[in-house]
Image (cartoon, rainbow, N blue to C red; front, side):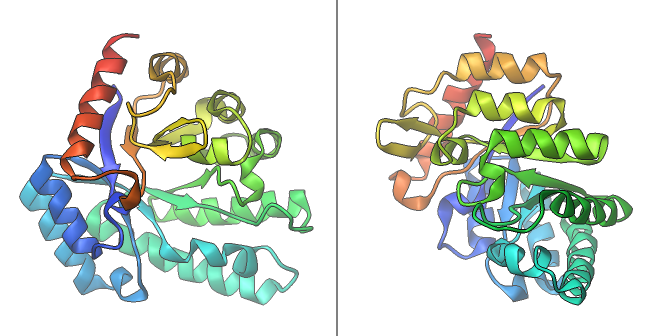
Length: 262
């Protein structure tokens, strides 16, 4: 069964702990925590997040690191030592994720205009995925409009090369920003998709709350359930894309109604 929720990124730049608590007060139980500064990975801060999660009965499904912008430089250059050092840094992230119970780590990857060899990219992702697996975490490649992962052909090549060791996050708005249909991206990811970021679009507006645009969610939910998907589906928009935070609840109710219509 698909479980709906939202990312704390929806409330940015509200501080992460305050955003998480507001989600709890709204009754949102499935969340992605978007971390926004180095200190937010530290043990004492994460224990505070865990306290909030437990108080409201929330599940922190996934972790999104603020420093994903640096992944092209840290993972995908010819400087092997930097890759190895960053891999160790991410191992620590995976350990810290256990404090709040998150099991999915969202990865952006290399920029779309990079000349870094494709097979080398896949091999480095495989090393990262193995480190995640050893730490009890699924490292999942997200499709991102400014990254190589914006292209369904790249995603399919990644899936063909890595097989069962690759997993994906599908973000609807990022597919649109990359110039592709979310259905093309879902088809490329196939049954390896483990996490969903939901949003809506219409015309020039590519990041709306679900229900505020024209995207066919009934068709989409039919497609993902055909793949056997039963994970979280979290709203991820930005603070300028809605007014009162209660609109998030209206959007969640809309999504639940669309799922019932498949």
